[in-house]
Image 1 (spheres, rainbow, N blue to C red):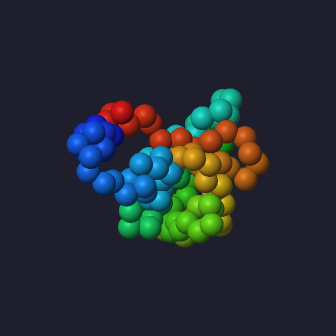
Image 2: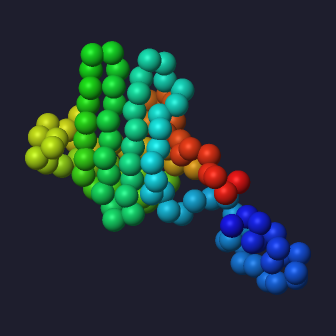
Length: 119
């Protein structure tokens, strides 16, 4: 994508400013928690508005799945009881959007996307 934009610019083709921005408007993707010692966590935000989440810390394993939405720089996870997760690890969780990362409420660590293979 980046190379296509550079080629269009070099050719003098008008490219909307939004296409040049690094800001993500679609926060769907598979995130991994980084920056929290001895803790493993992943978050999958699906394009259909559903999510799956887990957190593992020592002998503690928590899971949740449900619906997600984004508004005003906040990704809101709303857990639902399901057959696979009858007792979710939380009811709601607010993650603050910072660049392409999602920051937990306590400010420790960040859910990050793996580097893009296109870069």
